[in-house]
Image (cartoon, rainbow, N blue to C red; front, side, top):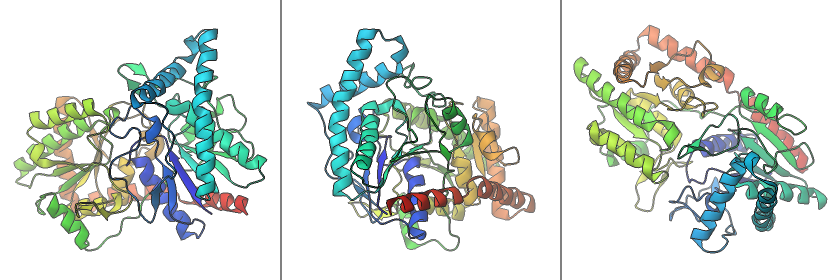
Length: 470
């Protein structure tokens, strides 16, 4: 079976893509999937990611796993006009309940005009790349309603032509649970409205979500059926000596091998709370000095290019705290470790977790908005690598991990981050020393994520999709 990927994030690297990599690895291991996967990462409809709109970064990742979609998606008119139109449609959909009758008719017309172009594009893309099933990630949200509508139409057209396959809508966020704001204005309606296509139960369309909470939210949507819950697939993190590529990468960043590495596995995006991770790093640095220990580094997965205004705030915080020598922004983490055009290594998530584990480090996960994360994988990544994790409180933590999962709590108030930094340093020190109590807590963390993120549901879903293609 050949699958394609359409991702609504509009960025070249994200946690969603890394989870997709894990799913593909599972499918290849089950001999269900062919490689490579043709992928459209949403650059042409996300002008709110100006560093990548509309064609993506100058150097796009292509590997044995993923290749950029061909042909290129349509861009209508000059870029300024296209950006303004996409933004206007998104904001109008978010405010749909307040629109008058004439405005509603006009908005439908604008959506249909763009949807027609993308329907032709997706139909040609599916044929050219022999795609059986397209996995559409976070495309139920209303960032690009014309694109979502085009995907639904392309799926129906396949069945009208008696072609197997279709579109699997795989959502990590939905309307009510994604309270993301843009300059104080909510980016999405609180619930679906007449402009937002929803995955139905008809031929050629499947719907999956990553948590029971999202399935419960979707059960209240005006659509027949309920999405299937398929938990995220976590990476396998090998143990043993580090390969030369990892050592070369660390050396290229100028990292002292005697110092522990903290990972902040998030994009540099406002609600991800990178500024709080820096506060924890500053506190951990002071706590390390008090204990006579080497100060940790912080490696932030995301790109400073994604959100320029927020990146300026993050860098300002790093300068204020004197942390610039201790922080590295990785400009997005590739799906597979690879050398870039300069010959330097860029490590994937698994290799970065191995590097942190070998250094006796940890994970810092500090969302600054309680109700945006619907799972929050930072603690899970720490668990599979056997690392302690410091985390802020967020609404999805307890439903995802339960009460027995060990984390160092992060209170974003100044006194709280000081305490968190000290407790994180103590946890890392105990882990390096092999103290039985810490070893037991981290072992329990691993058992919890093994239970709560099973690979079985994805294996079953991929098998069903393959059987559907004949």
